[in-house]
Amino acid sequence: MDYEWLSVGKPLEVRTCEACVNRAKAVFCTMQPKDILAISGKPGLYKVLNTTHRAIVVESIREGKRSAVPSSSRVSSFEDISIFTYDEDLPLAGVLNSIHGHLKGGDAPTSKESHEALRNFVTEVVPDLDQERVYHSDLKKLCAWYNELNDLKVLPFTDEDAEATEEAVEEKAVEAEGQAVAEEGEAVEAASDEDAASEA
Image (cartoon, rainbow, N blue to C red; front, side, top):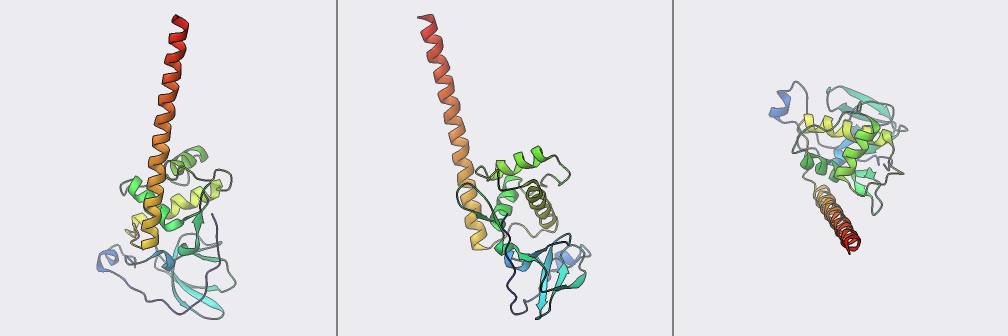
């Protein structure tokens, strides 16, 4: 995954919804990728509440606890994170939407699953995943982030870029499935030709 630094700007509006407050947590159902932060060295995901020259005030999406993070920390907005593929890099938000659609809103494998299980799962969703540049730690984060956001009913994102990426991922998955079927058909045809030649 490609991480970039978060650009510190003006404070963002904070919104809550009654349905999420019932979970005893402040969950922001109107959140978009730009609102969600991953902070290096800190578990979970966060929403930015305010920024200063020295710190970023954030709130844990799951626990609702607020804290100040030094502006020198490595902070990444979901809007700035992408997934490496053999073609073009895909925005993280669109991939999360694709996982949500693939699982029909169900849970993804947990980070405790084997490396092979995680890689096979993500490759099902993103057939042209760059197998060399996407590491096991990336797969674990992707599934963990998906499960956290899905559990809090944040997914799917309605952001236009995320939806466009989701459509592109789905098209590639269909293409990959069609190619596999075609290759299987060619293999069967080749075997039939060999059998015919042997009988002759």
